[in-house]
Image (tube, rainbow, N blue to C red; front, side):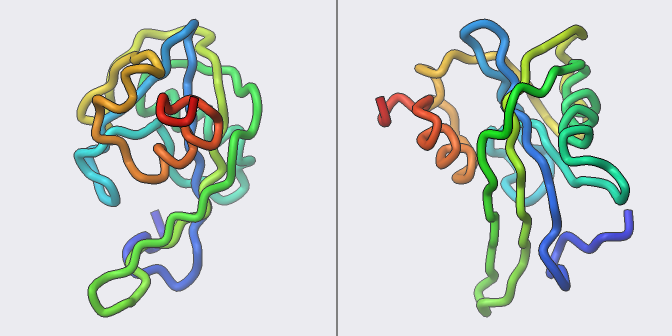
Amino acid sequence: MSERRLYPEKPLVGVGVLIREGDKYLLIRRAAEPDAGLWSIPGGMVELGERAAEAAKREALEETGLDVEIEEVLSVVDKIIVDDEERIKYHFVIVDYLAEVRRGNLKASSDASDARWVEASEFPSYELSPTLVQLLRERGLYPESR
């Protein structure tokens, strides 16, 4: 992997996948920074020559074992984290997609220390990444926004 995630020279393009199955959504607990230990959605970096939607499908499969069908673009999120000296520590532009499960068995990978299906009403009981809370609120899925 040639891109430098920590203190990058330019923004990096990533994808996130909000996976839905019936009335439940898949959350994963992030194993790596940024947001290690927080609950989020599967995702990762777009590889050179790869279309964003294909990256989303690949990341979903790699992190969860699930083959998904991309439904739509949900949002584009700017994730910029600065350090104590105001230097850019992380800068991602993340395209978030909604997807449905086609097949597979849920199994968290090394990028995710845990994975589970939850109903939207359960979101507040999880320590979610700030960008996921923002996305869920924008889409009317976070209970406070109903």
